[in-house]
Image 1 (cartoon, helix red, strand yellow):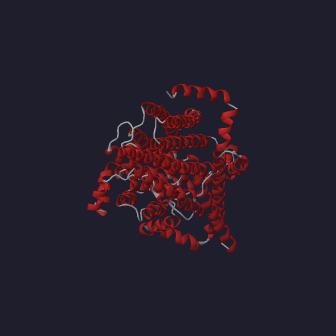
Image 2: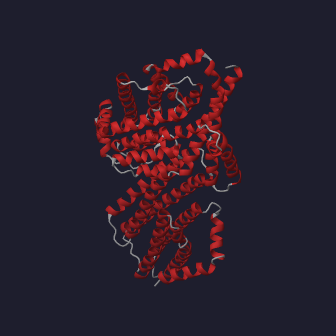
Image 3: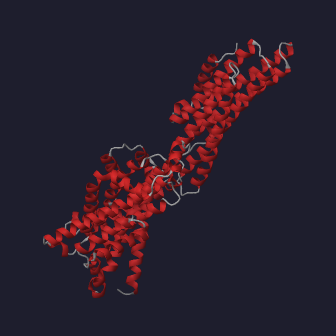
Length: 589
């Protein structure tokens, strides 16, 4: 191989790795976190876990990504180590799909349809479709599909370029002599592990091995130890991911390592015992791209079948490596309020956004509870309930701090338009939810002040506040329920109610001014009622914002102010009908 041949090989390798990275990224974005949510809701059935791990990994084309996600799940307490083991086994099987796709490059034949199956034939077609989708697609889903197709085409072109560049080496005795040394099991395992550890992808490592196989220098006997090593080398990604994580997450990484190491050792022992007892002719035969894919699959299926009954043993081995400490046991007894905000999830933005939504929904329930409890203090005041409102507000503040910091981190990642919009919407939403909890504390303090000063509203004022309070409780329930349940129809009912709340605010204050003028109410009570009414009205404003944000998530071409204006003009009849209905429900006495 001359200098230009080396350049061609480097270029092919670069295209291959880049194509694999682009295709994997596109697949992850297209899944939008759905695959990870499936993993999160995993049943404890080991067989289902294996099938699920294989399926998810086959789709995202990366066992490393699946395992890193599992490390994050265990680290955050979402999943137990025993649940993760089955998925790890399945992930190893799922990653073999890539090698089978790459084996298509080895198809030979003059038949038109056989030629059409070769990547050099259909990759240009996929690249053309991909670039059309990418450049003309307005939807993110269409663009992601375009990226996946382009990534696959680049990957296959890189594979073809690598194979073409190394093919002349078949006639170089020195090169073939070096490769034959890999049949030494120890050397083969070390080389395979080192190569995979460097590029941190067993799929890519096996792909490189398949490209080199066109030289004809590899035999089945020489590639088997290398493939064993490649499966061990892929554990490096998970091990690195567990640095700084909890001991439980570190154990997950160790299970991945032990599974691959024990699987490789057992497989090699069986292989060498059988080859010493029986004369297998295929051992010294030259291996092609399909043969490497076959060996890769057989090993991973073998390792899973052998070790699946011993998942408890693998778990115990991980605990022997990292024994449970007293601090760990104490930590398990204390509930973590923010287990979903793990930094490892930031590498899959779609899933991280879903985790943030889950916490935002919890935050919404807490804000709603704080507000309702504070409103009831005017009817039946107790210090215990007042303290409860304050505790809820402090917890909402924690959610606000944690979510805001995490979303800012997430916003710095490579997000598509929809993901970026979702992050922005969530940041605005948690701000409104935090303000609702603040108003709950304001109302609680007003109730405390009333109790302390022994102030008593007139029966008329009490009834007016009850009606006003019911309307606020209604809009609060509607907006938060619409936000949590992603109910666009329910969200559309919030703005008309907000208009009615605004009118109630004005009417309650006007009526109290009249009572002040008639001398039937004191200035002190008037100020207290005005503050209560103002806080109620502000809460309804934040509820309106939440409903608008929920609709904004569904509509990418949506503008908040434009929506409110259109709602009152284009759908004025429907808007007015809803308003009239609310007015009949909330009539001041």
